[in-house]
Image (spheres, rainbow, N blue to C red):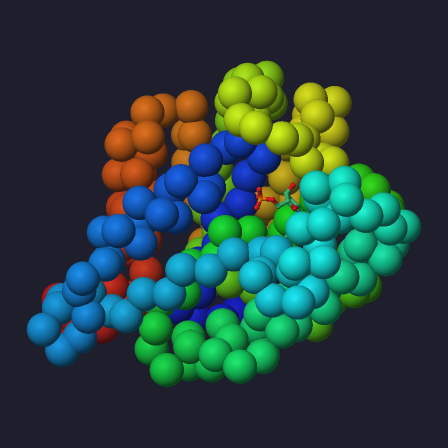
Length: 216
Ligand code: TMP
C-alpha cells in the first residue's frame, strides 16, 4: 500500500472528540491562504462523506434503514473510492499541495466492520486504498466516551459500550501495523480538556513536511 503525502486522518472511538478537534484545527487555518499566509491551503473532510453513498450510510447509522453488515462494509468502501478519486477528491487535492485532514478513513472500516463482518472482508474491500501520511488516534476510555455520547441527542448503531470496548481493542491491535507500513501514528490523550487536546493536535500536524515546505 502506498502513502498519500499531505494527508492526515483522525481516528478514535465514537465520542472521542475527532469532529470537534477537526473543527478547531480548521479554524486555526481559516482566513489564511497563500500567498499571504505562512500556512498551506487546508481542506477539512470526513467519512462517511456528504455524497450520495455517504448519505445512504448515514441512514444506516441512524437506524432508518437496515442492511446486511457486508453490504454496509461495501458502502463504506464505495464512499471512500469517491472521496479519494471523485471530483475534488483527496488524491487530487494532496497532489496539488493542499493539506487534507479527514475525520475517519480506512482504519475505521478495518475496526468497525472488522467487528460486524469479521476481519477478512473489510481488508479485502480496502486493500487497494492508499494510506495517510499521519494517523492521529484519539485515545479515550470507552466508559468516558459513552458518558459523552449519553449527553448527546440520538444514538447511532455502533454507539454502545460493549461495541466501543471492542473498537478500542481493535484500534490498539491495528495501529502498529500502520506504523510498520510507514504511516506516522500518534496517540492523542482525548481525556484532556478540549484546548489541551487541540494543542497536541496542532503539534502533531506541524511536524508534517508540508507545514515547512517553503511556507514558513
Ligand atoms: P461519526 O461521524 O460520528 O464518527 O460517525 C461515523 C460512524 O461510522 C462511526 O460510528 C464509525 C463508523 N464508521 C464505520 O463503521 N466504518 C467506516 O469505514 C467509517 C469511515 C466510519
